Length: 106
Length: 117
Image 1: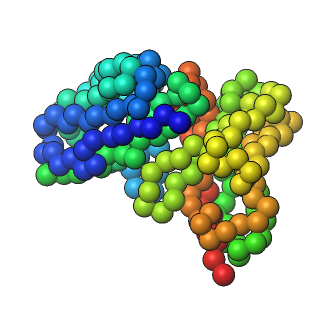
Image 2 (image 1 turned 60 degrees about the vertical axis):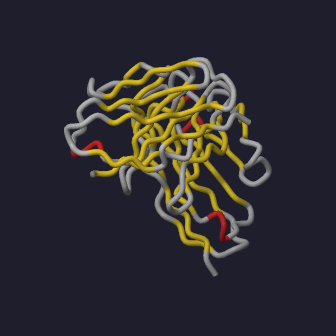
């Protein structure tokens, strides 16, 4: 099983600043990596797939990068609605999610 | 518009059986895999399994193999997740999601299952 490790567990950032979230795979997943956002009481929402491709309707301030085992989600100018939990997911060998990063207001 | 609509919240006792549903609309239901994802209270996302409604090809996560059964009825565009004997540890939110280009591009609203004596 491919293990996905996200860091940090919690990230405190002020609105208007940049947030950088990391995700590491225990073995290469090529570019088969997605990022999801989940707000309290809501289902997850797809943000990024193919490591760097924004899903339909996702604002340009969200960007993904990386390949192989190291991936990054960057939110360039944080808006109030961006504070949520973010999960990475590999789909190179079935599916595994990371444990999540909680992005909170500083 | 693609939609996945799940059945409502359930409260069950340990040992009881349960089948929850996920109805797809706005796309060709038989052409996309549907996955199930568990989220225990306050915890992260866990992939349980996936089914291709076109031919009912089904795959399970090793963690959930033998614990649940995934099925689909393509005539009514609905996928199912069922348990034969619930445990308290099955208490969780369960999501269905459509497999897009590998990722899960559309999600149901979730079904909360509570198992308590």
